[in-house]
Image (cartoon, rainbow, N blue to C red; front, side, top):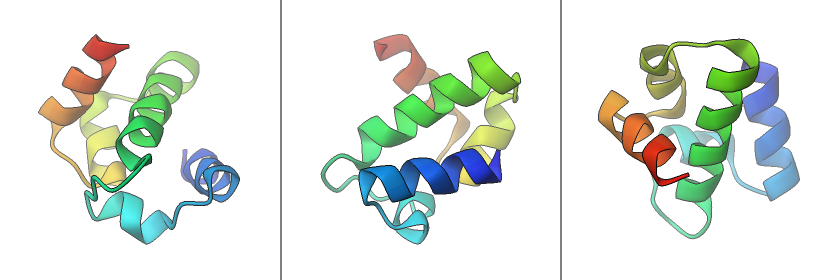
Length: 68
């Protein structure tokens, strides 16, 4: 999971710390939503753990997935 987050941030040119601080600047929310979708569907990671790793509330992950 950690590796996927770091690779995605590198590819999207986003600082991992900024992603984890809950920032809503620019493309960060969309990257966070894409990561959540991938982590749930590919790795089966629970949304609670994804929220912890991405620095947001569980409800944020749920809402992001509903918008997809």
